[in-house]
Image (cartoon, rainbow, N blue to C red; front, side, top):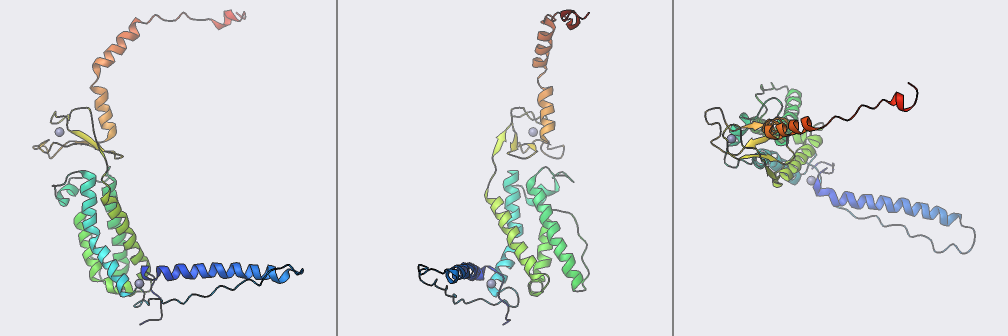
Amino acid sequence: MSDRVCIGRCNASQRRRTEEYTRNLAAWQTEMTAWANTTNDDCGPEPVCPIEPTLRWTAGTPIWCLEDSAAIRASLLDLDQQMALRLMNADGYGSISLEERVSSSPEPNSPSPAHDQLDDLVRWLRGWQTDYWKSQGLTVPPYRGESAPALMAVVSLLSAQLDGILAHPEYAEDFGVGVLWWHNQISAAAKTRPRRISKQLRCPQCRLATLSQIEGEDRIECRNRDCGASRGGPMVMTVDEYMALVEAATPARKEQAVALAAQRTPKPHIDYGQLSGRA
Ligand SMILES: [Zn+2]
Ligand SMILES: [Zn+2]
């Protein structure tokens, strides 16, 4: 048992009650000073000193308690599952495997916030891995790719060293808090399925009315699974590319506009010089 108090959720109510007591104590001291300085007889009763709460703190072993360490481990190991759900919901392709989806996503700049979040998470975990491995004199294994398999790989390496990391005075707190934070973010995002909006134009590749866009994403894709079977997969384009297609698909409207413009009688030229008498 260490004499350090666990920094985790187990002591949340103890921390809240300590803060409350500290606030009440400061308020009481102010009241006492005012009460003591009152010279007339009408100063009321002496303010009552707040009672210090008796608190049972859970100790860290040495930094996080066993329960909080277990919660961090569970969150770390669940990251790739939650990320898989998140990617699946964001892309709307329930039955396509994660690896396929990730390897077919455009590199380096994916227009999908879910893929960006995956890359950020992998980078964040690798940063910890590099630091911790170096601190232990271990050789940092080479990194490959920024995708779902990369996430699984870094999670499994870190979980093998987790006991050491969570006991390390420099890494334990920030890593533990970070893992819990990431897990919250991703599982919350995985639960909210964004709206898919159908687009009016037909898919330029398969000619079906199957183009759609996930709300808020700069990506319009064809939902016909047979689309582009011989060309490496369904049509994917940015909103700008789609707008260019919309523009090109309305020549009739353009011709109409040109014809109308031709019919318009030009306005007579106004000579402001003559009107003002300065000519
Ligand atoms: Zn704890
Ligand atoms: Zn298509």
